[in-house]
Amino acid sequence: MAHLRERHVLPILEKQAKFWPVVGLLGPRQSGKSTVFRDLLELGEPISLDEIQAKEEARKSPGLFLRKLASPILIDEAQKAPELFDAIKLMVDKKKIPGSFFLTGSSGFSSKLGIRESLTGRIAISELLPMTLAELHGQPFQKHPEAGATVPRFNLDQAMKTLVSGGMPVPAFLREPSQREQYWRSWLETTVFRDLAAFFPKGYDSDFAFSLVHRMATVMKEGELPTLKHFSGPARKTRNFLSAMREIFLVRQINCHPEGIGKEAWIFMDSGLCSYLLGKTQGEGNTLTLARHFLWNEWAAQSLYQGRSFFREYYKSSQGSPVDAVFDGIPFRIVASTSDITRRLRLEERPLLGAMKKLKAKVGYLVAPVEKAVPPPKTGGIGILPWCTWS
View 1 (cartoon, helix red, strand yellow):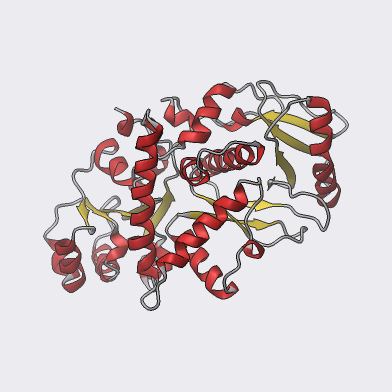
View 2 (cartoon, one colour):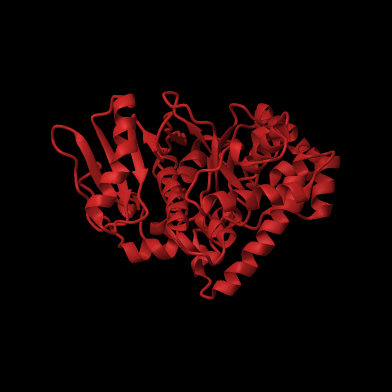
């Protein structure tokens, strides 16, 4: 069954459960967090704080609520009862038994005052991303070889389908576009009207939130990265809403590299959601935007599922187009099309060469819709990598 496919975060969670008394798994709504704990790790049925009665009991008498549960304790959407975290701390300090508590959350625990501090030194937290191309096809996690020597496991057609369907467990396996549209409409409404509203005890404006989401999509249709300059509303209000959207994994923030001059930019958490918001229009801007979402998910998976920190950074100079990503000082620029490949790629090389010079990088890469990698010259220069290099 699609929802029971192996997730590449599993080895990390299994290792954490052997050493940490509390294991947390964060990620977007309906990304499969409870399924990972309940079915793949076989921990049993979780207590969901989406249920009003359970949430009220947990907030009113957190200690009593926990003592009634059998170990290991699995709590879904734990951030909805912040009072639980001090009670968990007390129980853990009495008996530090690894794998005693498993918590999921659709927002960062650190966004709730006191939650992260309560469990400092007691909790290991991982993030569950939308499914990668390998997970969607039931293939094992594979650390990609050295850039330039990679022969992708997946072809361009498989990547193109994932650009549209995304990696969220339900919509990714829906065959009818109309069903995916219905799913995303409902998902977005729940996320904006309920999850996002929880961050604004006073003055929450759902219309403003939806306007930001749709404005982002409009900018993305041109293949651009949305920054604050693209929004017409009050800058402080816009920033606050975008920050809250980041906390609930609706959007991802991409910071500009310290050597660049750009401001923080924003993308959506999944290419499937982005595809829904872009609508049925086509064009190179749409393709570039969807490829950008797909690749940022694959890049994040390569780091996070190896237990490494991950930083989203792009590069922007005072002139020219931005370069999509910088990893270990090496710039990567995503290419949407290779029609008239020689002329096209030479045009795409210009901002990449500028980034290489500024970053003092000997090599840089165009990431293109091609099937085979072209390594850079041995003396340094630009190479070409397929979209599927990291899959």
